[in-house]
Amino acid sequence: MNSRKESDVKILWGESYFKAIKNGAGSNLFRNLYALVDGERKDILKNGVLSCATFVSSILLLFKLTRDIHATVEGTVADLKKSGWTKIKKPREGAVLVWKPQDFGSGEAHKHIGFYIGNGRAISNFYKKRQPILHHWTFGTKNGRPVRKIEQIFWNKKLNK
Image 1: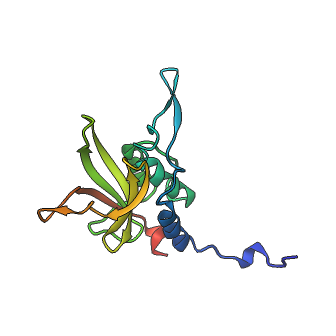
Image 2: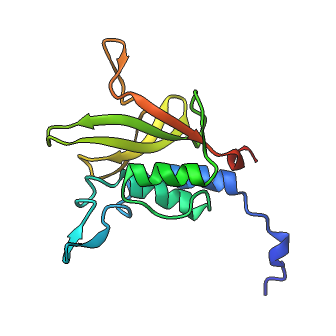
Image 3: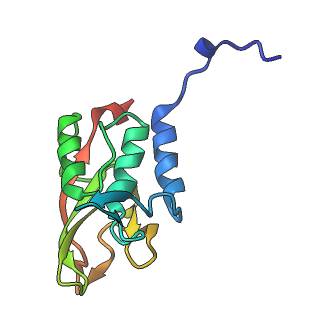
């Protein structure tokens, strides 16, 4: 029988948060989100093509850093602001990155959101693989410029602990 009291255990939230982000890479957990749209059942994440906001907001909600799970970058960013996240200029491990809109041939430009994990690396949903992947924080460079430009970087002071 375990005699340890719950009060003797202190969860290391920051370390657990960073590990959850890293463990999200390769996961299919955030691939689908069903909704009734005009009375019709639809997977609004298109089987993982549009899962970046759901991945990020799910991790943030799990660690009580936002208020809800979101299917859009705009909804996630609004929640970040309401939940005490502030914009910073340089990324820090655990920061939330928002990339500028980009069109990948569908005729629709989409913003993108993910996590900075340090050393110039990020984890975000990759539409082709339909799951979060580890990648360069600007998806690499071309002719000395970022492939995808960062629009905003968010930080929560709770991550300082």
